[in-house]
Image: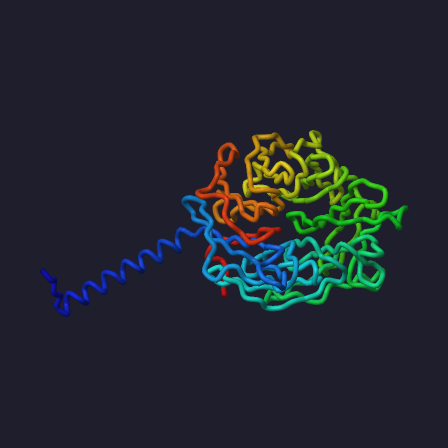
Length: 400
């Protein structure tokens, strides 16, 4: 028997289907809690340019799915670091082999659109931090021809003012040397090569810290600066850096701006410091034991828990925070060699790690009561070759 529809029935059917589709689209939109941006150092194809994989995170399961048209070109070779503007509408990506920072506008659907590209003053940029109206960029070496791979010297930090459209202005001038960067030089041993590894701004925005290790004599250090309102930097502690283990690899400030934490890959430890007018004093329980070769650190939005990726163990360590001190909760397996970690900014519910040798991203659900982690649905998630960094925004925050 063949069923026949009159015109009214057909219109009713079309309307019903349309409403169903609209409802499904709305549900999908609502269930996306965050967009996560994962840079990959090597894209498929002959040019070896980098890519940015964009994942949408399901608010119920934590499942991460690449959005349509992902991945996107990173705008250069070997992207190694990312940062997001304060209004979550712009993504900044460092392409290390081109000495560039690329500005991407973020659409409401999570897609990214290249806007502007600037060069860093030095050679091989490696880390970024955004605080207020400034972006801080750290270069492995000071500018050519003074420094190079063949003739290395200490690294440097530059300050880029951020315009109202989130594009980057020319770096601020350091009048003491008539240059647009601040050298990271060890007083008393100016010929020692200080290799930077990471940068962080205190939550107050008043201080900026750069981790380094001495490639000449050994030892880890933190260079501290006061961040002035005009963007210039003033060295703390008369330019003498603070001791920081053997090989510091990452640094972060807590959300209160009271403490900073540094992963020490050389000692398999986490160092904790209290901030006193910018000066750093070791916390009473520091150092804290980490896994082998810790590589990155994140703190949840409540300030109750910290999470550290251990690259050689291929896991993430969880810690509770009390009076600044860390207490181990446990360790959770990731893909091979995690190098970066992020926490979802919408609900503080999900954690993700970029696994460099695993060519994937691990996802976890955070238990807000005790800090323990559970694998997200279908984790890990395939990324392109050699993922290096993660950044995230809440869904619906961009204005484009």
